[in-house]
Length: 201
Image 1 (cartoon, helix red, strand yellow):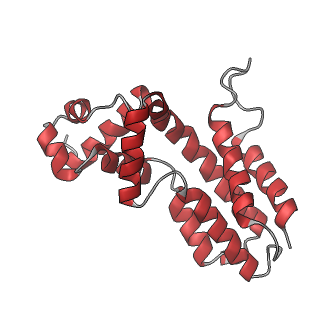
Image 2 (cartoon, one colour; image 1 turned 120 degrees about the horizontal axis):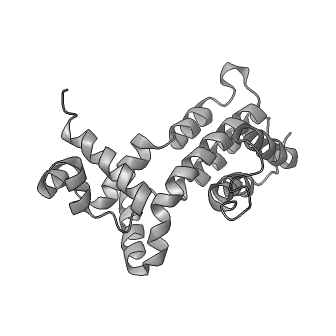
């Protein structure tokens, strides 16, 4: 069986380790070992662990940001309603946060590492604020199209929508059922409908 290219193996190994032991504990040395390459080889592809983390988010997790860019560029593509678009956003966001939350949560236990990570994200021009900005931009495009109320606060609406998706990623672990009370599709539709009720034209 042909071996995968080194870059693919590194991203796969990083994804698996970040999911199981968290971003803070997944060292480049351990990632390289799991990928079957040297640490030097890892750094040829990724100058820092933060850049590797961004690659994992972009290439192994649900594609939230590309969806937001597509909808912002053409919100009414295929004559979809705002509710349908928000439902798709909520569904992808819930999947994205369910996978990214366990990866990044370990950073909050190590303030120095988190501070360094945040600085690196700023240098790379990315971070957890990007989806909020993306949803707000999409909603502004809908305002321009007359499908969202002119005075609606798009930033607040984006924060409410994505905040619910983040909460779904961890808020129900300690319940008797150990899972959210709604299916993913029910949740996405309900959150989208509720947000739209407050901002719809």
